[in-house]
Image (cartoon, rainbow, N blue to C red; front, side, top):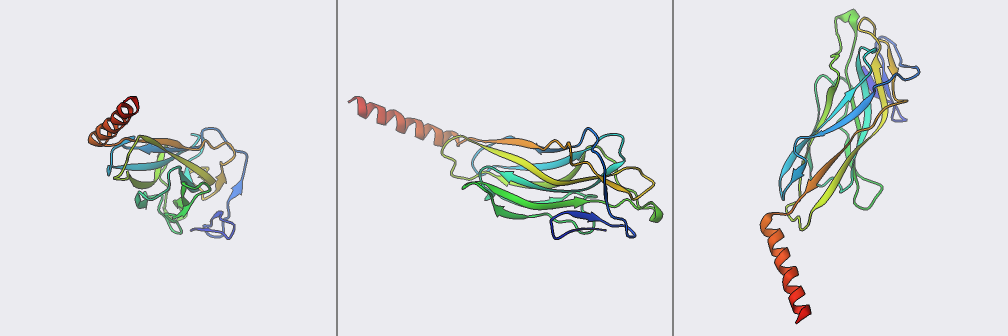
Length: 207
């Protein structure tokens, strides 16, 4: 089982085992994939977050991360963990305001899976492995094009070192964080109306 400690760290414990920490290997990364990177008013897209690890390890054990949205989180829905990274003690996180006036954060995403060979439970060794999905819906009142940045901020990234043991180690030291962009564009009619308004204003000024 794994659970969130008071300091926000994830403790994986299987028959009393606690994670150890070792020097990080190469190749650890969190990636953010956007199904449709350009949205019009009211359009939606699926965002999938995946983890990859160095091939010398066996599988991803657990991840704790936040997703930071540069334009708030008003359009977020359908937050979900992806099996098998939805094991005991996991969490889809909560939506909270970010540091900036318009930022939003999906805070405390906690994903993980068990590897317990004694009970014939083996972790999925897919590399990369998807662990989180969320849907983002564009505002219906888009007046002008703008860009939404989505970034990960990871505080825990643990792997199982081999298939035949429950031993887990941290690989946070050289982790590459994920980033993606979503472009919002106004509806063609809205853009045309805005353009005509600007043209009329220019003519008045010239007159």
